[in-house]
Amino acid sequence: MIQTTPIRQQRRKLINLIMLGFCMLATLLVIAPLIWIIAYVIQQGLPAINWSFFTQLPTPVGVPGGGIANALVGSAMTVGLGLLFAIPIGTLAGFYAATHPDNGLGVALRFSADVISGVPSIVMGIFAYTIIVLPQRHFSAFSGGVVLAFIMLPTLTRTTEEMIRMVPKSLREGSLALGAAEWKTSLSIILPAAFNGILTGVMLAIARAAGEAAPMLFTAFGNPFLNLDYRQPVATLPHTIFVYAIAPYEDWHAKAWATALVLISLVLLLNIFARLITWWRVRHIGTYH
Amino acid sequence: MNLALQKSELPAPRIGVIRRLWDHGDGSYRFFLVVASLLLIGLVMAIGYELWQNSALSRHAFGWKFLTTSDWDPAIENKFGALPFILGTLMTSILALIVAIPLSIGTAIFLAELAPDWLRQPLGFLVELLAAVPSVIYGLWGLFVFIPVFVRPAAQFLNREFGFLPLFAGPIFGPSRFAAGILLAIMVFPTIAAVSRDVLRAIPNSQREAALAMGATQWEMISQILLPYGGSGLLGAIILGLGRALGETIAVTMVIGNNLDLSISLLHPGYTMASVIANEFTEATSDLYLQALIEIGLILFAITLVINFIARLLIWRLARQTKGEAHL
Image (tube, rainbow over the protein chains, first blue to last red):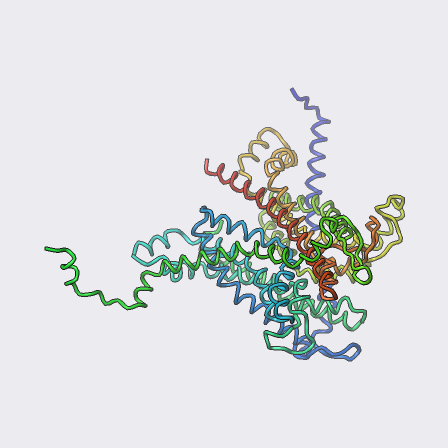
């Protein structure tokens, strides 16, 4: 039998207190960098932000003014191209994973999506480089879009799958019982019911893709001029931050912070918005668990 | 009377092509679903194939010695060995895990077990936001804020107190493996914490109630019941974090100093596999040089593939196991 002396009791209580306190402290330490980063980016970036920062092209070192219009356009182009490729494939694959969760292909699909989401983005960049940039012999917005599509695919597939699973089975069965074909049921019953959820997946995918700098180094490559041709290189927001940050010029550093403020606002707003939609769904449909 | 004859006497159904597709499109619908799924599954194989093919020159020239030699001389001798980068990646990732594991598991315990309900959701959301911050912004912050404010003083302290160890040998640089490792720790917090929280939440309540009913304190319940119960899932979360640390590129490139330093001092600048690709890929002047970099990418791909495979397997198995018990 275990001796339960008061001293032993007190020691157990003390250890309990210390360890629970450690968990609390750990949470604070983990969240602190987020607050620190956001506060610092706002403090450093805000002074350089004005209307012309969004509408002008970059100026050479030392010349005041200049903006990131080229990077805004380039980011929109690459992310847009990425969505164009990733949404159809991701949604269809998500539908498959949701409707055939247990057969061989379904399991392989869900497993592949999880594994792909862990492949470093720089490796995706090399892959796109070897299949697009090498044969074409030049960098392009198109190759950047393809990389971003690869990066977005797993997120899109898994969220679509989860959202479709949340649609009550009775809806699907009711539609099939009325004689609607399976694809018609998917398109006009399940898709509208899961649409908000799929939309949150798209927003999270955009947020992740818009922040990718590493694969852009040798796909979209960067471009100091405004370019709307998908066959030519373009600048992107994260790549611009990288280039400005590692350059030895003070005024470029200021621009790096301002660009970072634009990017982090975009990414955080997308995340918050996606969370709000999910929260709204849970409240009004209540099928989330 | 003949049945076939009777059938032919019936008026032919007047259904147009569109109407027929509208009612009977399931064949093509399933076809599209399967094609999309196969595309996704094929992507993994396609990446492996392309990297393998495009690193042929380097693979043939150096063989397995590529992994164990440390010459990286694109200019004169045209010899390449990946050892310094493999070492750099290992050192920074291990340092990141040592810092990140206790803090993120502690966070997961707080989020899953201790936090009051009104705090749980907002805190969980903040942790997820931490994962959403683009890595280039971590790099920017690391370079201009974290290194001068934290890394430099901490490195000076380590060098003063433990400088006799080769691990903490001077001279001290701001950008260093140490800086990269700590920044990586911050970046893998949310991955490990969020997955561990989900693992802990999936443990059936009966386990908690049994422990508490036996008179265990809350910490005893957590450390002796919940952590062992969720063990393989937590291990999965940690391995997932390791995968992220190994492949993280741009933030590391910005704070590690990008230097072919062969010492094992954490306080010296270094290189990782990902950062050497980011830094030198567009500058590779010869085919062999480029293919050596692609081979480093191939190694990175193989490692992360294996790591993610193991991590997902562990997490999936636990999810299945707890689901099974919930039905009982």
